[in-house]
Length: 305
Image (cartoon, rainbow, N blue to C red; front, side, top):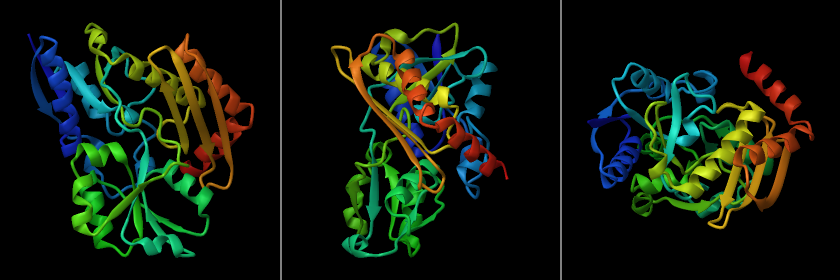
């Protein structure tokens, strides 16, 4: 049997598919890559949050899986809804890359300015940025990493925010200097749940858990349970990161912000990780105890208007 690997067509998605293919073939599977266009790739003029609550980048591949056009689908796990379509499951995770966000900027003058223009298509990144720099203008930025970088160069913006893993895996980091660009990590910005993780989704009759990177998988379970309980999907400004060690300990930090970044709820905890989903749910409940459910309700009302 040849496993058909479904993937989006962007360069980063293809990189992820090739990494999954390498892992599968190293474990004795024969594979074939099947590129498929997603709704999120086709509608580049709309902000992500206007394209639907969850699954905008995964829906087309879910349909291909259910219709048995492909056997597995490879995704950036942060794009995968916490509630999968009936009959599908997250069967494996590749070892996590760097989870952090970075600021890609044109000039060191950016740090002396009273007001900057920052580009991002993420409500989470926008809210975190405004939480620290409320006077800055934040403009929408969509497309694959190559297109977003070109838009930064073509516009009179000061900087744009990217996931480090996306630029690194696309081999763009090495090109920044030649384009007159610099970058720095945004240490105060909590990454999206599952950022930096490549996930493999399959029909429930295919189990690839034996090839999964275990500490990455455990971290993903914590972060996805945190997000699921908060019911934020990919539209609310929610950050969550679990660092899981080989001896079963976890350090977690999570946050929920208002759309304008003025209000922020944050939780920090560490301990033995006996039940990842229970731990993630408990962290979400700690946010809810601080008023996160009301904040998220207001966000959903604002986005539906």
